[in-house]
Length: 231
Image (cartoon, rainbow, N blue to C red):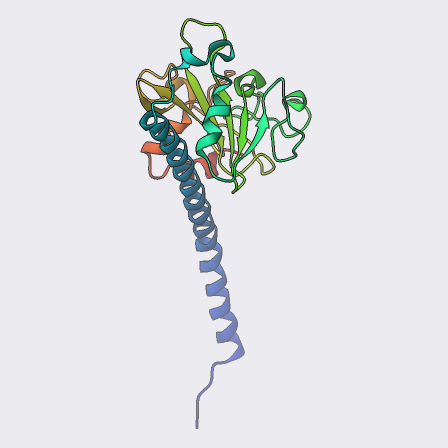
């Protein structure tokens, strides 16, 4: 006589499977999302880095002082020439009406970019010197000098596009600085911002999160932390 599982045994087995799934699946989802974000971050960092290298190879100006007062045109106008299938979103004075671009005038109304803790809207003046929309939806936002003797070039990257939330520094928005011939993640040495003060979930300031790019680059499990802690 063949033996079979009883209904009780089947239900117990299914219950055990359910418990194991409940424990493991959230962790697997977090790991998958973290891997996806990290891949997008590294890809964006590479794209920006390669453009700077190509500009230097072509002997095109990368010194911020060369772009003061539109001497050679806004920096993003030069930058976009080295990208394939990219779209200009304009800048503060020549804004393009494109829903995939960030509208400075709606900073407090329509999915504004926020600091790491989510309590403060980032000042839109940090993004108002041009935007470039890449073919995959990634958005590059530029800050370059105006009249200062020296002012750095900052490029912030929305790695999953403006239309996808949370639009938060340290989660899907990261900032790089071109310094001494090298593209650096903000938070690195001499980039004016520190990880302790500007990538700290327990700190409240108007630039909190700007230095998270350095953590994202140097910490392999950073995005796991970000998913768990940035709500």
